[in-house]
Length: 116
Image (cartoon, rainbow, N blue to C red; front, side):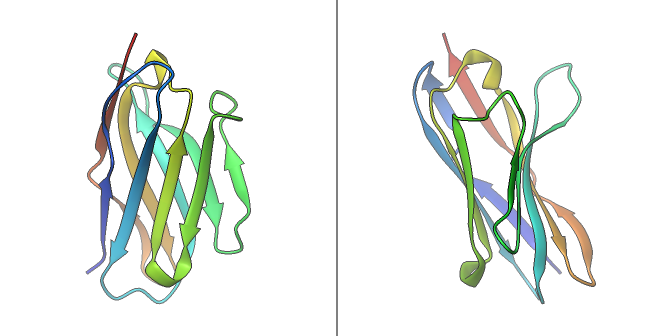
């Protein structure tokens, strides 16, 4: 069984920073892709940023220049450094991983609240 556990969410003022972590555990052969998604109240879940095993990254336009995604393959852990946070970044942030052979997995989410 594979588990993804997010951490690092919380309440922060606009302009502040947070660092999210996503740790994958279980029987993992190889993680081909990892991504951060978010879902704000009343809105659909959207991709925030993604990173491949080769460290190629992709960002939503709304977070480019403010957020940085990274991963530690040895630890099966992914990070999202969020700077210059805005109230519109408020959402539940979910970790997603595509694991070779096993398929896609999701974490339970961590809440990020940015106050104005």
